[in-house]
Image (cartoon, rainbow, N blue to C red; front, side):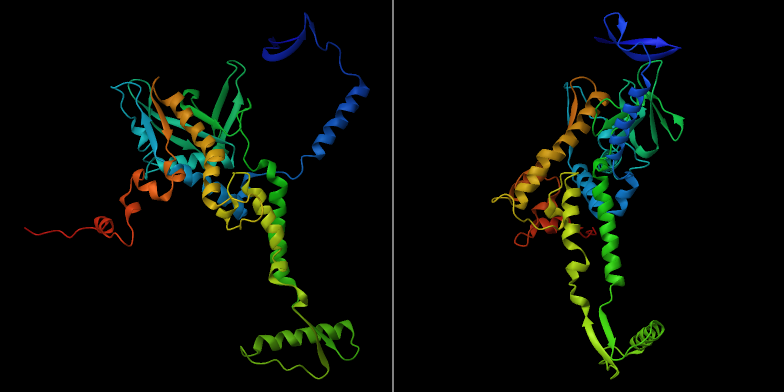
Length: 383
């Protein structure tokens, strides 16, 4: 059995052969077709809620997780390792696109990582070259507007932006899950059901607070539904005109049957359900729950925020920024040269950060004001 590429009707296609005969030469029987349809229907029933990356912006947990990953990777210094004594740093190492990202490469990296997690791909597009043929500038394309198709003529991918073709040599695609497909998938795609549940829980909690009656008033005599509505309207009007802080005096014909109905704020806000959804969604980006203001409970005996932060860098951030660095190294630099992200300021203790941080502000402390003074603008001395 072997896989071969054959041209049929002017198109290239993959054909699985056993020896010199096709694995299937005859059409499928009617019974087998029905059976395959049943299997397809079964798997379709397991797909659950339809996912759209646009839903992320309506869930604070999902939006915050992506922001935490993007901002922490973007502030890491991007170092250059020369392959030869004559090698020089490329201009894009400081600012790849002054037009769209005038604040430097950190903003471009943030945009790329955000697209990487939100849409499943980061598309870097080279906008200028050196005389040597290596890139001198690049930008980040909006992933939701980039189309990827299979080119039958070359057997490679071809790219387009909003329907306009792009030069393949200028496109650098960094997929979150490079499994051989045309495009990657969002980090939150498999969390579609949880995201839908989190959205529904938030709406339900809001409705519970707004629409749940906090007080029940019971008449001492029988009244019909129309009289009950009139009484409710009269009490609402009285509540609107009552002075703030003034006591409420009920009519002798009414009895206060219940107040707040026994619901606590936690029950109305569905706190436990929302916290569970937040923990699950945080795992999509490997974010430690304490960064989302979720308390550390149970689990490991010796866990603490510092250990969880380092664990996040090693298990999630490292794989992401390494993939970006290796993609830029392999497609933007000559052989022997490379770039890499330096996460020292996230992994070293705070007492050692002054050795790796490039800003003098990290050394400022209440007991040592000399560094603080050095940061303030000095008055000009007239000669």
